[in-house]
Amino acid sequence: PKEELVNIGDIFEQEKSTDGPQVPTIDLKEIDSENENVRERCREELKKAAVDWGVMHLVNHGISDELMDCVRKAGKAFFDLPIEQKEKYANDQASGKIQGYGSKLANNASGQLEWEDYFFHLVYPEDKRDLNIWPQTPADYIEATAEYAKELRALATKVLRVLSLGLGLEEGRLEKEVGGLEELLLQMKINYYPVCPQPELALGVEAHTDVSALTFILHNMVPGLQLFYEGKWVTAKCVPNSIVMHIGDTIEILSNGKYKSILHRGMVSK
Image 1 (cartoon, one colour):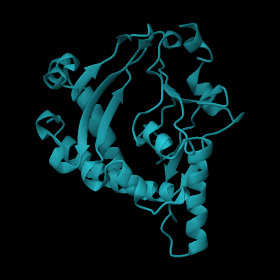
Image 2 (cartoon, rainbow, N blue to C red; image 1 turned 180 degrees about the vertical axis):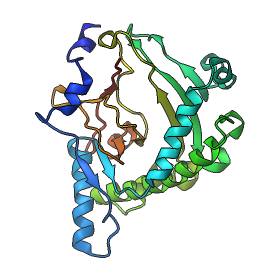
Image 3 (cartoon, rainbow, N blue to C red; image 1 turned 60 degrees about the horizontal axis):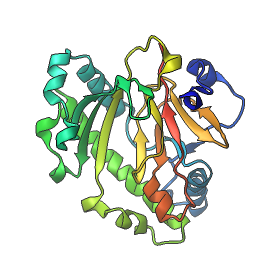
Image 4 (cartoon, helix red, strand yellow; image 1 turned 90 degrees about the horizontal axis):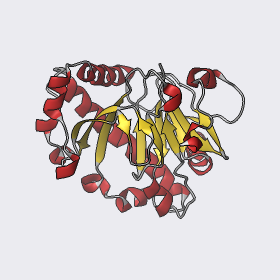
């Protein structure tokens, strides 16, 4: 559709540009500092980003570079497998089997060409996951992903605590409202974007907001994320060792619109 082709240009050139608004970067190093002033300054920056943008780069988030690299490598190794091996883990949307391997190298229901392979599975809490559908190859996939899920879940608790306080609530209120430690599910989707011969005609992921409470994106320093901010598409910079975090629709609703769930899309390239 013409409206989705507007502003689709060279994503690499757009990422280098210093003009216009930039997605905020939030340093979480002092989020639990014993110094009240330092702690509150860090938390205020996070809350402001959630109010103004609904998306941010998180740095010093507590998840090691080594673990993030292991997860990236494990995901890439899976998608490098022959198609016959990947299809052993194929999902079946028609029958309600949504977890597993899937592909969107086709037009979606809106007529937009999406260019994406993916693997989707529930990774936390541990008692609700199904390891039978997790890739057995590469050999370290399960170990790396399980550890990453555990640490990411702890990060979500920290963020939800700050967002609760920003609403004038007790710090555990938002987490309780979205399910708490027992019921809040952490689902992981690994997106793989094959080389696209005509990137100007395709989207990696069409424009959408996330229905989740929070979304965390572990990126690979390749530009592609765009946010619809103040009426224009803004290309997110690649910030080393960061995790991109989106406020989801659930938190926007629970906060009565104070925190924003921003419209975003994923671009592809040659």
